[in-house]
Length: 272
Image (cartoon, rainbow, N blue to C red; front, side, top):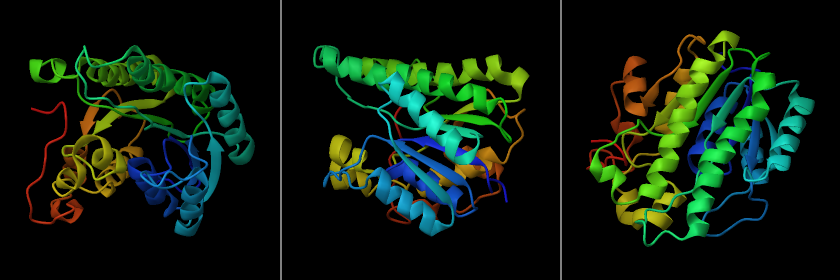
């Protein structure tokens, strides 16, 4: 069992991609730290840290629900301390929490710019910083950041530069940690979906039901994460695409991941 008894700390794990990863790992008996802000359910988004933790337990894992806003360093430190107190350490960190606004320069307020950079960049940095001392002692330690290959083509830089640079910063962090932490046998990679993924964010912020219907389910990301976490620490320093990861694992049937099997799929951002 690849992740049995490993402790996996996942930010933004109450719903969508984060929760799908949590449930996949829970089915193999992992310890899952559900770290997110939601303690009361938002009808548009669904889920809280407590409902996600209950699903993890039902799937066969052990769960710890911790409320944490990764913009607040004190909350990060407290969440990491609670995880270590509960499970004895941290083996894997999944930097999944992220903020998005596909607005151009004039339409991006300072508040929205700061939100994206405080969560996507600063939050990811601080979350990792606080986990590193425990990852150094971890079992097949891995940092996995949900961010794209760095694509400097104008069509990705032009329309929503504030969001784009925040996500590219996450990928640069992932690559930087691969180099910095290799000496400690800590792997660091970035992972991004080949297609849009059917989540509340995609539905509410990006394209409604029309985009959901040409997307894949979060299960494809969860399966790709499972394969990545099965690799040795020497598998590091990559910006990975879920489909390519699963092809390496021998997967040939991708239709099972489609919301509408056999239908058209919408390519995700940052991919030509």
